[in-house]
Length: 398
Image 1 (tube, rainbow, N blue to C red):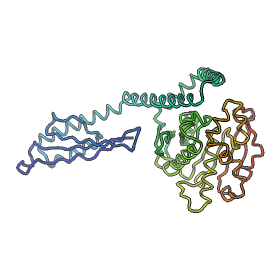
Image 2 (cartoon, rainbow, N blue to C red; image 1 turned 90 degrees about the horizontal axis):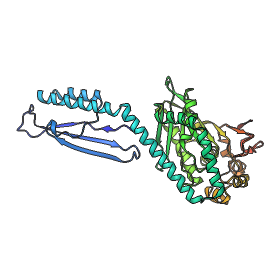
Image 3 (spheres, helix red, strand yellow; image 1 turned 60 degrees about the vertical axis):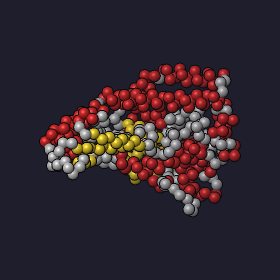
Image 4 (cartoon, rainbow, N blue to C red; image 1 turned 180 degrees about the vertical axis):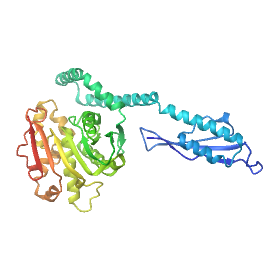
């Protein structure tokens, strides 16, 4: 986030000195917001009497430096004018140096290193929780081989993610460590653009906002803004935390996307795999809150034009054994879902059959599901899914 600069105030030392005296004291206050923690601010105060005492260059733009110099010309002498012009020139050059490709590259590399460290730390934490077993080692090696074969594509997408000016990375939407989202903006801003809020997948364990970079690139080239919402994974958080994070991210998109050129009347929600399940749970929970009385809500399901679910699982009661056979063991899965008694609560397909929340179901937006019939990560067993009888078109892709 760009630093904010408070105006530079000039004060003459004493009444004994004439208004044209060069012995003036200038006080400069800088307020800089730390990028990793926007709630933290640094206030720097510096006093100087002459040019040699200047140790901090004011972060002023070329235009504002010039305007301040013009304004000060009416109250200071010629020597001060020359000094102000030299300081303003130095400040502008310093700012241009900060905006140079070299500085930008340094920031991008630092950001990439920080993100890599975060993912690695969470992976090690997860590994300590799961323990090291033969099946996990084999799956890890298979994943490594798969990633190696796709490395050329990963490098291309990664370069776009870290160096494209169309990507606004790690925008804060909440107060939790993973409450960040990435925005993919189109090049053309001839009017408000439709928006897709995307919740990435990752088996509730390895989900990360950067996984949506290819989708963001493709849709932004078609004049669609994409917001990839990050959320806490297990064991950093459980299912309730993931739903809460997704809801806060959607709320941010609904309330703030107009500031980035988005159309708040054309917001679509999308999720993939575990992200599709999280997004569906978020929608149902929000509808239940709206149907109740006295619920404090920060966004409404009526703000979502449609929901697109890609390869999601919506009935966890039927998926526990399948996930166990795939290596997501029952004990781990139940820990993610906060116990067996919570499986129904986090099964949108089951929840919408409850007669007590019929009014909430009527508030849901149109829902379109896509699922490959050969998908073995999450089986496509929703042919007669009662969750979407009233409000959906169910597409099945071979």
